[in-house]
Image 1: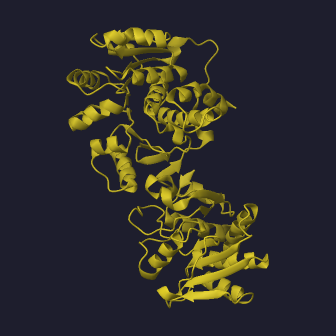
Image 2: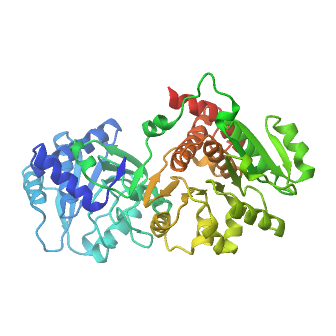
Length: 493
C-alpha cells in the first residue's frame, strides 16, 4: 500500500472528481458522512459536541459533519477560526447550509473568544488538514493548546491539526487526538515514533476515492501487505533434502552473551534453514549442542571455510574486543555472498567506518535508531533518519532494516514499512531472533529484499500470534520463536 505525500493526496481527490465524476462538494459530503457513521457506530453522539473549524477544506468537512449531526438531534456548537480571509468554495457552501439550520456558529477572532471546553464534551478537530505545510502560530497555536488542555475526548478529522503528513512536526504545536479519522489510506506521519502522542487511535475511513489513481503514481514509501509477503514464500518440495535449503553460519555469542547466540540459532532453524553451524567460543559449544542439537558448532578459533556456507549472520552478542574485530574483518574481506550484520558487528563498523565499503553486495544491516546514528551520524528527527536511510540505500549495495514499531526496510531508494508486531517485542533478544530469521531466509536463497520483507513481517506476525497465550508484558523472545511456525501457517492459509 503506497504512502502518499500531501500533494499526491490532493491529486487523488482531483483524479476521483474527474473520473467518477463527482463534484468536490459531494466528495466532501461523502467524507463527512463517513465520519458521522463512525461516531454513531462508536457511541460518540450522546454528548455535547464542539466542532472547531479552519476555513479550508478540512474546516468544510467539519461544517458538513456539524450539519449531519444536527440533523440527528445532536447538541452541536461550531467555532470557526476567523482571520478575515474568505474560506474555500466548499467551506462557504457548507457554512451557508449550516446557517440554515442553526445559530450556534461562533467566530474566534482573538484569544478572548476561545470557548471553555468541559472534560465531558466531545471535541472535533477540523482546523487544519493534510495540506498544512508550516507550524501553527498565534491564534491557531493558542486554540490547539487550549484544546489539548481540556481533557475532553478529541476526534481529529483526517489528520490532527498541526501535524505535517510527510515531514517532521517534532517541535510543533499539534492537537493530541484521542481518535483520528483519516480518509482512504494511512499517512506516513502515523508511522513514526515522534508523532505517537498526537494521533491516538487511527481509523481509516473509505470515502470511495478512485483506486485507479494509485497505479499511476510513484511513492518512495509503502506499507508491506500480507498478500505480498505470502506470495513470496517458497513451497518446500516433497522430494527435497536439507541441502536444498542452505547452510547458514551464525557468528554470535561471547562470555555472558550466550543467550543471543542461542536465540538467533533457534530462530534460524525454525525459519527453515537446512543446516546451521554456530561459531562460538570453545567452552560454550556444549551449551549449543545441549540446547539445540539440530545445529552444529565450530570453535571460534577455528579457520572458517567460507565456501561451505550459503550465508553468514554476524554480530548477536559477539562483543567488540580485538578477537571480534579480527573475525569481522575476516568475514568482510573473504566472504562475497550477502550476509546479515547486526548488533556488535554494527558497533564495530561504527568504530571503523571504512568497513562499510567492504560489506558484500546484497547484504542486510539491521540497526536500531541508536546503532544507525553511530554508523551514519546524528539525526534531528525520525523523518531525517528515514530519509537518510533511503538515500544510503541508493548509494550503497546493502539493505538497511531500521528497527522500530513500524520497522523500515530501505532498499534501492525505496522504503517499506512493516505493520506487524507489538510492544511485546520491546525486550532483549527480539533483535537476535530477527537476525536468525533473516539469515535463514538468505541461506534458502531468497533474494535479499524478499528475505528482509518476509523476515521482518514474519517476526512481527509471530509476536502477534504469541499474544494468544501471552500479553505484551509477558512475551519473551523464545515465545516469538515458538510462534514462527504458526506465522508461516497463517500466511499459507
